[in-house]
Structure formats: C-alpha cells, structure tokens
Amino acid sequence: MNKLVTVPKNGSLSNTNSNVNFPTLSNWIDDIFNRDLPSVFTSNFNTGITLPKVNIKETADDFMVEMAVPGLKKSDFHIDIEHQVLCISTERKDENQQKEDNYTLREFGYSSFKRTFTLPESVNEDKIKASYKDGILGIVLPKKEEAKQKPPRTIEIS
Image (cartoon, rainbow, N blue to C red; front, side, top):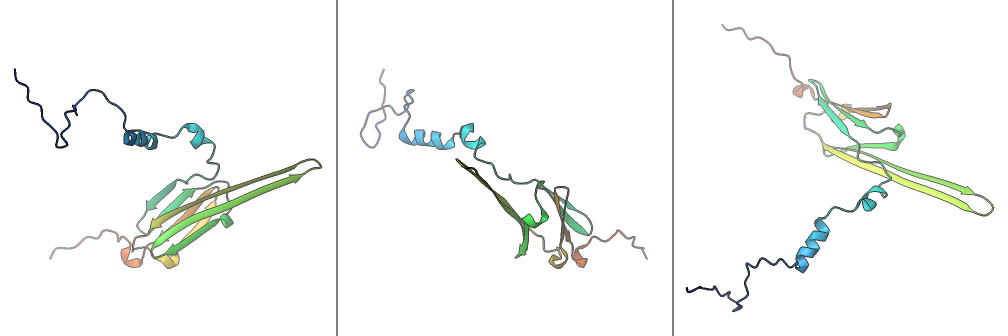
C-alpha cells in the first residue's frame, strides 16, 4: 500500500487537485467584468436614438438601402461617401428652457448614430440618390453599366 505523491517543482506538497474552490483575485475580477450590468445601469441612461435597422436589397440595376428612422427631418441626416464607404449619420441637440419668478427649468438632450457600409466596386458613386419619406430613409445605389445583370440569351448551336 504504497502511495506515490508527485512533488511540484517548487517543493510544496499541497494538493493542487483539491475539491475546495477558493475564489482567487483574478477569478473575482473576471466575474465582475463578465457579468451583465444590472438593468438600472442599462435602462435609464440610453435616451438617445438607438442604432436604426437597415434593409438592403439588390436588383439587376442597383442596390437599395432602407433605414427606419422616424421622427427626424431630412435636414438631420449627413450622407457621405469616401473611399467606397457609405456613411449615414445624424446628430440632434434639443434644448428647452423655462424661466419663472422662483425657478428655472432647463432640459436638454443629445442623440446621434452613425452607420457605415463598404460599397462594392460595381456601384456608380456619381449617381447615388437619397430620399426621406414617412420615417424611412431610402438610398439608391445604381450599378455601373458593366456590372448590371444582363437577361439570359439563347446561343444557337452551329
């Protein structure tokens, strides 16, 4: 009945396979940062615009981007293209101030978003058009002539 014990290189005889799980400092820190934040931190502080949903559709002649952004005006949007990257952004600042004899009420808000899309080389950047109607921002990205899909044709066999 001879039991062999493996001795670690540091000379300690402590059992490293112990069933006792004492939290270490690194486990405690990992637990804090990997845990979801309580709802009090996430629910009341996001009063701006959330990232809008986007639909992208490809046809034979173009790509169509639709973005749901109700409550804005077309002058609120900034649409730029640089190095084949389409950037759609908005920024709104609202400020309201009321003064009475014994108090001043001042409320302000800020909201913004920015979405970017890498355009395929087949897009004709010079002919891109945008419109805004009923809360939907629509952007038409026409394809270059050589990139448009041609209808199928029958080839005669000689």
